[in-house]
Image (tube, rainbow, N blue to C red; front, side, top):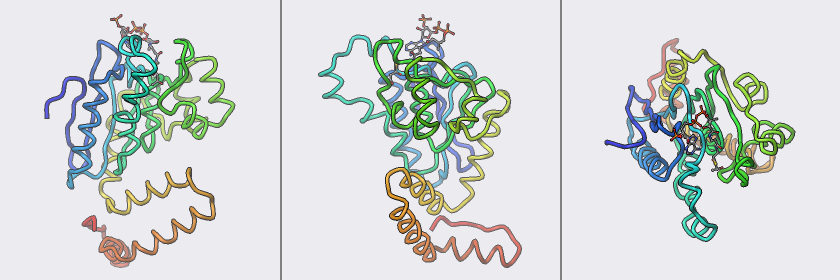
Length: 258
Ligand code: CAA
């Protein structure tokens, strides 16, 4: 599939989506988010894909919503068309595991899209921020909701109210980032992590992701009950039989994703 603003490829069972608008530091224009939505739908429906890596360039993961495109929009247009719900949230709605490999700027919508992924691996050059307040607006694609859940109220307030950026080390300390790696190794490390995930049972990986995401929506008691029911149901899977047999027989499991 040929796209204008992203590139896609597969490496074994891993799908890679690279944001590719270098002239605008990968600002998230409608065309880009539309293509991203389409690429995710393709990978979601492809049985041979077990995990996706979403990345940008060395200089910029994404510098936010396309300000030049947003500038001319009005409240009614945004409300009726609801572009963030329609296309951007396709990242959050993606059911298979998806990692963000972030180098350089992840600002505004760029930070929000990275937070919609299951976890972030950052290069030591990554910079995160929600600078929308400098533009006379606040974050509009989850920044005020996902950021405090990831890093706590104090730092989320600091970032959203001052518009300052935080570097990779601060982001890791705060819990936004799972790992930091040297910039030159970012894609390799992200691909290795994605390959590892894609080698597991896809059903179990998807249910694990869903269970962790449910922990943000449910009470602890309901969440634990829900987790236990899904765990119990996994004993219907061929992959559970294979995984436990492989352990007992001291060999690697060969999962069939069913
Ligand atoms: N939208 C549109 N174009 C952008 C852009 C954006 N978010 N970010 C950068 N660009 C463009 C610049 O306009 C510039 O284009 P021209 O060469 O045609 O002038 C090109 O990318 C390179 O940018 P800079 O010259 O500014 O590069 P820099 O290295 O000096 O600065 C930067 C980099 C600090 C990231 C700076 O570009 C910047 O502050 N960008 C805007 C960041 C921002 O405010 N993001 C939030 C957007 S709003 C949002 O995301 C709302 C939401 O919640 C959904």
